[in-house]
Image 1 (spheres, rainbow, N blue to C red):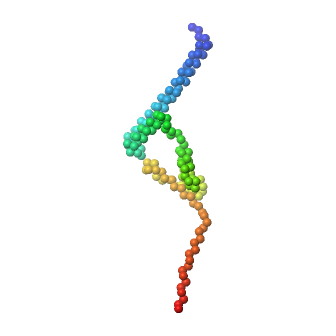
Image 2 (tube, rainbow, N blue to C red; image 1 turned 120 degrees about the horizontal axis):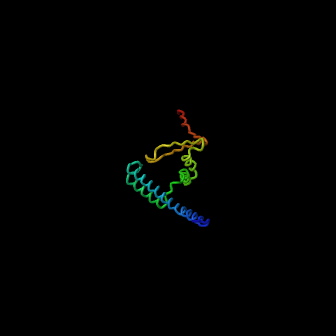
Length: 151
C-alpha cells in the first residue's frame, strides 16, 4: 500500500490537533487533582490539631478555600511584600515611613525594629522606633519669692 505525501501530512495534522485538544483537559484534571490534594492535607491538619484554629473553624475554612479553588478565585500567588506595602499605602502619610520600616526593616540609621510574638500565639508584633532630635526646649522656672526683710 502506497501512502502519498498529502495523506501522511493529513495524518500528522490530525495527530497534532488531537494532542492540543487533550492538553487543556489534562491541565484541568491536574489542577483539580492538586486542589483536592491541598484540601485533603488541610483537612488532615485540622483533624490532627496542627493549626492555630479550633477544629470546626479550621474545617470550615478548608472547605471554603476548596470551593474558591474550584471557582478559580483563590489566589495565593501574590507577593507578601507587595501586599504589605499596599497596606502601608492606607496609612496616614506621616506614618507611612514607619509602616514600611516595620515591613522591610529600618531604612534610616535612626530607626530600629523589634519583632516579637508568633502567628500561632495570635500575631507577630513589629515595633519600630525612630529617634529624632529637635530644638531644645528651654523651660524657665521662676525663682522662689525673696524673703521679706524684718519690719
